[in-house]
Image 1: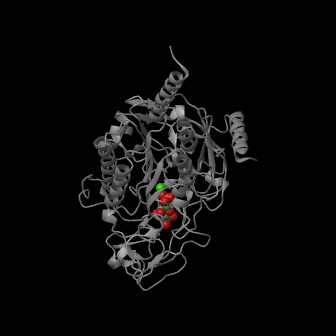
Image 2: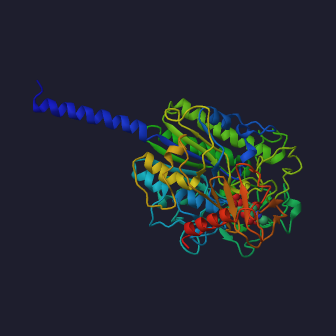
Image 3: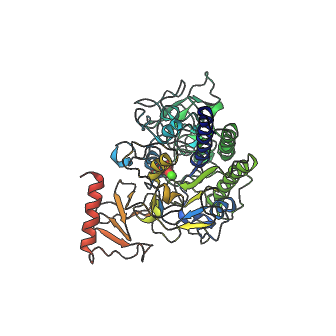
Length: 501
Ligand code: NG6
Ligand code: CA
């Protein structure tokens, strides 16, 4: 017979066992591999024939491949802002492509996705591209503690490049400090005027190892001219050729260190953004110029992460999400032979437009999800999914609630279940919003160039409203707005409602 003490023991045993089970189910490690400017058609898992991405494809084979997943915006800063805050970037001014000396644009007094995961017991780390500003209003003092930044919005560890590869300062930041900064050679940065007396791309093009095609004519660092001017910090400057190795190694170290905790790694690769200056072991290997070589380098980085999870035997309890911050661009400002050597490759697949665009090529991106203990191997989902839902979905996964009204709990969709999203909002470069609902996509009428000639991308601007039936016309060839005034009206109203008008 069970006495009271035994009852207690049985109770404790059941409680322990159930918490163990729920721990195993709900606290997987989480890795978000956030690539830069990778187009829907850039991976062989999505049908690319001219390039092979075996490691990325492994995620598709062992997991779930989405065909209708969207970044929140067609450029980097707003997409990343939305990813980490669960809030549409267009609700907050100053969230468009940030200069390299911008102040931190994420408020430190609101919960973020990493902070939520920290509260759920995760060790949280960011490695790679930041591009969300740093420091107080007015921007950071690069020679002192640089904060607020990642550590103030919920990351336990940070190893980042401040903005982009093509923007100064060209240095790495570990937690609050620039790595290898010599105090006797302080860094100064300006986005207004030339600083110091180092050569620029504009004045000394003969010093460049790769010419710029547009913009990118200021300070030359490592033979590449950048956006913005910098002086000092000579010892701290990065070498573009080593960047993928540097970031990948930091990411692997973070994983190893935290293999026994639940951890969240936000691995934001620099690849395949410009300047594309891959390591010599990838140069010439794709036959497609620097852009293709950078894709191979990216694939290598993904492979290193997967191998490390295997070696540490934590593959089964790790949820990996692989996706991109915006769609594809070929010439984004440097003469790197990406255009000449494209060789019939279609970075956006069958989609119209690319990075910056209101067309599908702007925000419809590759997305692969692998979690061996929960997600069916080799599955494909055609459900609508928006990256803005990562926050609420991961909160649901880890037993937290969110304070991010734009972010919906789409965990079921994320793991291969049915569609949860009733609509998708797409933000193009000019902050014009588009909306997808059911089979339909609507882009409001408005001014602006039809095409950005520098990058050779159709932006999706039109003085007439546009309506496309994405089911029948995924390439947005036939604007059927005039034939369907009721649908236009309905989507217009829905968009106004989401905007809060
Ligand atoms: C543009 C840059 C482009 C790229 C982009 C941001 C010029 C002419 N073009 O302004 O090269 O840096 O900003 O890309 O300067 S993103 O992926 O970070 O959004
Ligand atoms: Ca980008």
